[in-house]
Image (tube, rainbow, N blue to C red; front, side, top):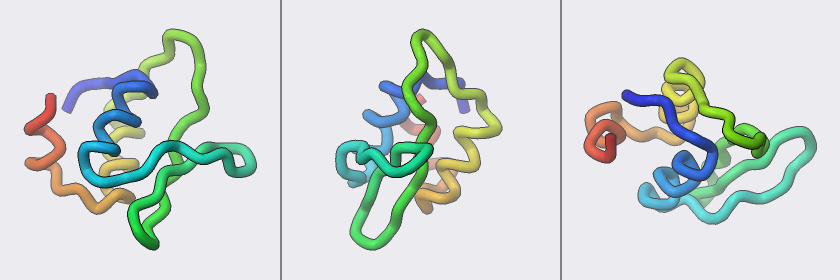
Length: 71
């Protein structure tokens, strides 16, 4: 698993069937049917570390092997 930018994370989640990011309180979120995954807010040139990406991946219900196919 490699660190990603927010833009890359959104693209990756869209590949797994999630819709575009929505505003919601303190954080944005993406949906896939009834599943809702919080994503970090946009910050210029910030990279999301592996630990947070792994937690987001688990929330999204994406197996690690499937996620790593896109690395």
